[in-house]
Image (cartoon, rainbow, N blue to C red):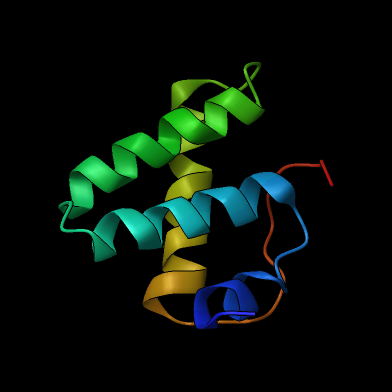
Length: 82
């Protein structure tokens, strides 16, 4: 299991794991923060089409801050999915 896979394997929610993985990969390939954030907001809404743009932005920002900026490995608040 690669370094990135090992880091994201502890994230329980599929949508949260997808968002964090996508954000890291987009940033690693040269995309700026805002572009990566917007793409991840869209990705979240693919998983949760019922979510408003504001809700998606809030959760994506929270998850990026938690997992990427602070490097916290604990659970997060968020959606109710698996």
